[in-house]
Amino acid sequence: MATIVHFDVPADDPERAKAFYSSLFGWTFEHPPGWTDYYFITTTAEDGSPGVAGGMGRRGMPEQTITNYFGVPSIDSSLADVIRLGGTVLMKKMAVPKFGYLAVCKDTEGNSFGLWEEDAGAE
Figure 1 (cartoon, helix red, strand yellow):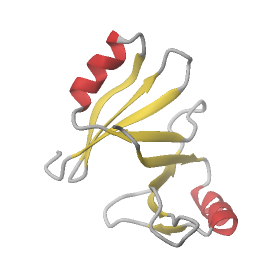
Figure 2: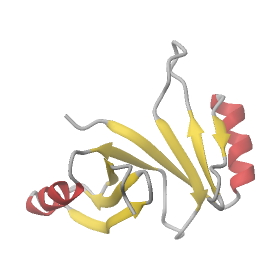
Figure 3: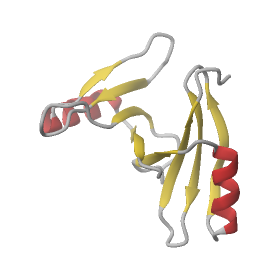
Figure 4: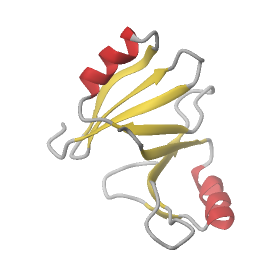
């Protein structure tokens, strides 16, 4: 069963957003080497255990909002299912080198969501 494995926060001003979310939720941010304007977000559950991982980068388009990514074994298969079930593919499969693949879709109710396929060999 697919669950949320990652969330992505678009920001017009990443430094301002980092200050907001770290103060509000206690999130920590790590700037991965070689990545510009993108941060990994670490969250914790109420009991102190690791929470869902996130990321934050510059907003790519004005209508971009927070996106939840559901972990799937195959993005290709899941994209076919999205279309078969009446959804829409907003952003085709894209590699995140050394991490995996993502795609963004819209469900039958107009809600956008992401798909994530973990693959350390992605290029």
